Length: 310
Image (cartoon, rainbow, N blue to C red; front, top):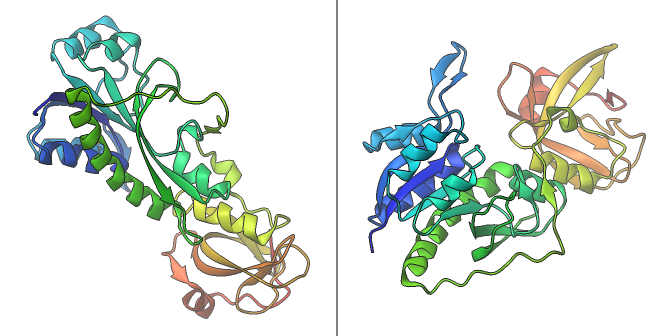
């Protein structure tokens, strides 16, 4: 059955869900997204990925700075919606917005709630060493990702998965799961389950300051840290040569056997000692340069055994 919907989302993660809703034949009458931001070398005003996709499909796009005032709330209510679908929108929805659609507001959240409520569930799951995550379709309420769960799909986190790779898988799953949820919701066959009180964790927004690599940690912990921050903002360290530090992002690494002073190169192939074991750096990026595999990087920037990384 066709539903009259608004879609509320902003980044790349949200685009497959909007595409799935359109492909399923739903009537998406408006898209709400964050306003254009300055981006690129020219710092031109750039629309969000959802904004650009919606415009290319002729959908009305709205970019309010807030939904807390009466005017945007009345404009939203005037859409006479069956439901609003939310996926990484970036604005808090006041109760007046949550109550306006006939079937309420449904959210696509990239974790197995109540674990990793909040802004960065994909990164935090990998950084914590979780072996499983998923997507939860949730009936939104006034809390931070506290609403009843409607549908859940579990996903294994592979030992080499980066945040980017997991992001793309969960994004595609979320769109299909939302289409299923809407169909069941309209039929009245969707069972809501309250989130358990136990197991609540919060996925706080990634702070760039925490991206620096602490070589005193174990190789396995640093592997999770690096993959969870790859490619953005990217875990980083400084390679010190001749007393001069060079900042380098580490985008992929492999835990290996080895021991030595934490942060010391054990060979000339970027095998770096950690607090426990060592990391073989696989993919790195110097400031202002492109991403390089180890062999390519070392052809232009040698790192002899004994070099310190801090």
